[in-house]
Length: 130
Image (cartoon, rainbow, N blue to C red; front, side, top):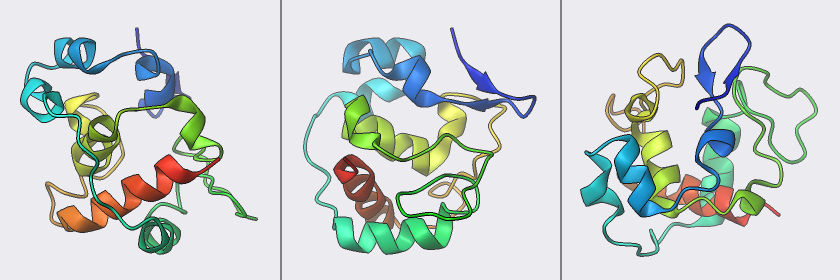
């Protein structure tokens, strides 16, 4: 099912989950069913999310305008085209171990590295990247 990059075991959520809707995402992990039950906007600030992405995500991910792209995580360029539900993106940032227990992506929410509003802002930014 999953696609991984290199030998690091980093899941490329856009490949594995791009065609899934909330019901099938919950089937991947039953704990997601409550999170995905409500499909509401996350009320994030995309401009603030962009600043956070350049602080927290740039080391591993390629971002628009990035001259020295990271190579560990999947590229974030044209992210909007994947049409991931906001809840999926939020969970991926909050704690990607839900999708891949072997991920090298930090569990930003679970470890307290980012506040929930910070993650909402990151989601708003990612979902805005044409």
